[in-house]
Length: 253
Image 1 (tube, rainbow, N blue to C red):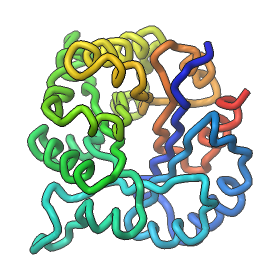
Image 2 (image 1 turned 60 degrees about the horizontal axis):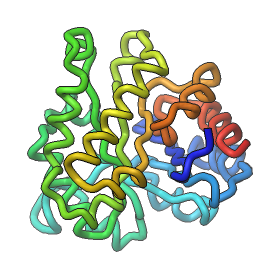
Image 3 (image 1 turned 30 degrees about the vertical axis):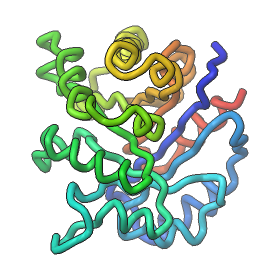
Image 4 (image 1 turned 60 degrees about the vertical axis):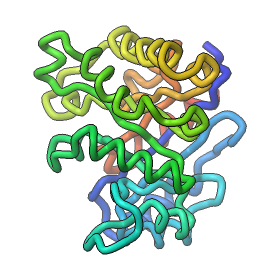
């Protein structure tokens, strides 16, 4: 199915790689990929320590994302990196609301709302991650959880939403080995788009990209991209960058 929305392919490198591994992945894989920027938008999110390294060697048509930012403005916050500092450094994107941050570091909707606000106010684009845990999925609460998380940033000005990509991120898939079906994934993505139509703006709802952050591989990527409301992927736990490379290739055929 041909879509009017440009496909979005992101790689979240989390805290996996050393400097030499970063160099190897970029020079041997990332920079050699055939990428048509009219068809797809490609983002790499290295760890904070590697932002400078990646910025210096990554080909210019691929954007760089931070994996996090502070919920506060620039100021006396030891260990934090503010959105304005990221923007000043030349970073265009930030990941906010990832379930690892929510679950492991107790980031609630209030904290996440402040982070999203700081990012958008300072001109960053946001990958806004939402999704249920396994317990909530098994109780049939997935859409309720997603609604609550969306409501956390509901009041933001419409113009801010143009800088948001929504990531449906059921991270429990990778943790327990259970997989959602393409139909179940489309159900959530379609619901998110309907929520945007009813609560934000119809044009924004039609144009905003909703990407999948769960388990993606060479077995399910094609069928997921064929779903009406799946506009790409945020790929994590891809140590050899093989899935990322494969998805880039099939996204342009």
